[in-house]
Amino acid sequence: MGLLAPLRAAGRWRDALADPTRSERTFLVSLAIYVLVWTVYGTIAKSSQGLHPDMTEVIAWSRDLSLGHLKHPPFAAWLVRLWFTVFPIAGWSYYLLAMLMPAITLWIVWRMSADYLDVEKRIVGIALLTFVPFFNFHALKYNVNTVLLPLWAATTWFFLMSVRTRRTFWAILAGVAAACAMLGKYWSIFLLAGLGLAVLLDKRRTAYFRSASPWITIGTGLIVLAPHLLWLFESDFESFSYAMLVHGDKPFTATVVAAVAYVAGAFGYIILPLVIACAIARPNLKTISDIVWPQDPERRLVAAAFWGPLLLPAIVAVLGGAEITSLWSMPAFSLLPALLLSSPAVAIRELDTRRILLGAAALPIVMLVMAPVITIAAHRAGPAPAAAQASLLTREVERLWYESTPEPLRFVDGDSDLAYGVAAYAAERPHALTGMPEPPASELARAGYVWLCLAEDGICRIEAEARAGSAAKLVETQIVRNFFRFAGKPQRYRIYIVPPKP
Image (cartoon, rainbow, N blue to C red):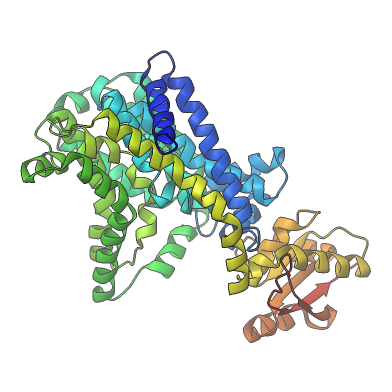
């Protein structure tokens, strides 16, 4: 009886999801629980590590509302600015925001899958996605990649609906979503190119391009993107230059290796759903062929819309001499359920659904139980001091600053990870200068600033002394962050206080 009880509970869950009168409510409640459990897991498991520098960097960007930034377009920063206008800056609130990204994506996939899958397959398809690390473990680190999860899913859904119906409503939504995806990360150009290629391969391409839909989508997208395009022009395309400086102009061999690793890694991330799908469907070669590239026009459009955005980056990277990483495939899997399960040859029994739902429920619960062990293990391994000690360093910086001046702390500079961390935690919500447009020299002199370095970082020290000169008050301090009864590793910092000039 004890072993059968969870399976029966999964059966009741499946029945509620399959019942037309209860399915939407049940799905939304399930998503809310999913977000809650993973948020609690992240809050506990990462409590000894602090906020990742990628997360504090976005907070730093959000302090200077702009139409663009050196590294990336501004959508992720806009969302963080809005979120922390309502919520306090804390681990739990940031992980909650992060987990909303996959949750919204799963809801979009649920709605989109209704056009291609019966209810049994819809349930299984969503459950399979929760086994992909992009929808939980990786999603907890909020950055420009996680923001793309719902934006790519929405663009894909609206685009497919626009091709199928050619209605103005869907065409407008597709344009807005596509523009937002580009405002999330320029990587989204591969989504747009892949969807464009998919419709060119579709038999309905002539009717589609003779309709107003594609032109409404393009026009709407350009209108939404226009302010950012103007910023790009005025900034001399500095974010493009940064991307090419960091990832471009690589040797041919290196780009080929990176492209192969990108494709292999992308499939590695979804290996568990692939194995489960094969285990329940037991496909032969004919079925596999029908899954990968169907003959049915509707399903072939889905397949093309899946493969294009996923594989185009590897081709373009080799041709363009750029290195890419499999982590960037994160938003490309919203059509995975429809691709894997829509073939008529794939049959799913109700018992299979219950078992998969049980596994999907067990994973976050097991991880939640393991969270205290994970955070202690991470602490004992010695997490990066810039993240783990950021809140303690901020207190020391604020203490030293207010010993020197009663004026508010407005600017922080120096080592980027340290500056972003202090900018995130400081009560005055200062602006990080590293990687950001600097204020006029006169304003900076009147406001003063703090420059932060790891004590062993000689380059940072030289830059600080060249910048601040004799005006700076130097304090070298050591910080140790203990976690419960476990001792942390000490780290020394050099803090340069440059007080305001009268």
